Length: 416
Ligand SMILES: *Cc1c(COP(=O)(O)O)cnc(C)c1O
Figure 1 (cartoon, rainbow, N blue to C red):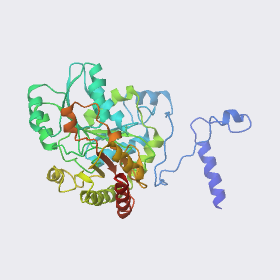
Figure 2 (tube, rainbow, N blue to C red; figure 1 turned 90 degrees about the vertical axis):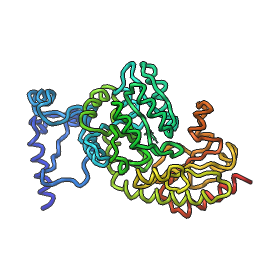
Figure 3 (cartoon, protein in one colour; figure 1 turned 180 degrees about the vertical axis):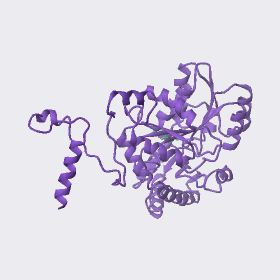
Figure 4 (cartoon, helix red, strand yellow; figure 1 turned 180 degrees about the horizontal axis):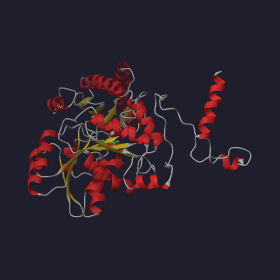
């Protein structure tokens, strides 16, 4: 009975194909495999998980509908570099989570920074950026934009008077910042920054990767950037990036960015969409673990200073508390030692992998030597708070007591 219905269904789908392909004797199999039967799920029979539209091309029934689509007179999809239904679902989800109208997806977090800055700046523009920012962001501002005649000022994110002065005195196209900053978790005063940028007619671009999609949406930020490689996908197995803003800005940027070509693949979009189902649970638990780890480190004799926005001893704890619903999963601290102790500490850890990235289910560590900061001038280095003892931890979903035990034995091993 069931078998019979399935067979009938299959026949109906074959016959309903637009072009009445002859699946009989006349079509050779080498033709057939390139024009396989289409299966259309009935409209009242939906899959609970959206399928992956792993197709580069989409076709309409005829040339007049194709022309109508290309003229903007009808809905649809045509070429996946421009738009794809799997990506569209993720764009709608992320825009909603961040409290904005629209989203543009790209292949990595760094691609969001490069694409946004290249799309919104032109020769002669000025950009305000910050010493404490993610390294590749500084590279894009200082080297890539500079090649195209875009100038910049690099300040400390804590230099509120400097920010006011630059925005008052120098016409500035973009203010590019992040909070908490990578790697030392400084907190940007978002209200101060956005108010002064608005008054100066500058657009604010906030890399919100560390804080996540549930934080900072209430502030007057023009463009949010996220590495989806981190908390959105959450499992360390896929890369992606999201640019989130109002419709007008995204529409304007989409034209440029589509022409640069950093498209996200539909399969990656599917994995990120799946990761989001557990985003809130993961973020919450990883934050709780990070706070427990911070408190342990804070009390440890071999740790000079712990930087986690959730700790009362963090210099900007009250600002973080005002701005954020929770405090993130990155913990930085300063070992009572240098590169040698840092390397011994990392090598002795068993649950923390020595590698880059954050926001994965497993815990990660970066040593003072890997965090670098060698490119800074002495004044910039001081503002960066990077020392020869700075360690960055990204806290995962392991049991907090296990993480603390591992950190304790590794600190002992580092100072033998
Ligand atoms: C990781 C990271 C990025 C870059 O993301 P990728 O997906 O690795 O390209 C950008 N900004 C911040 C704050 C990050 O932590």
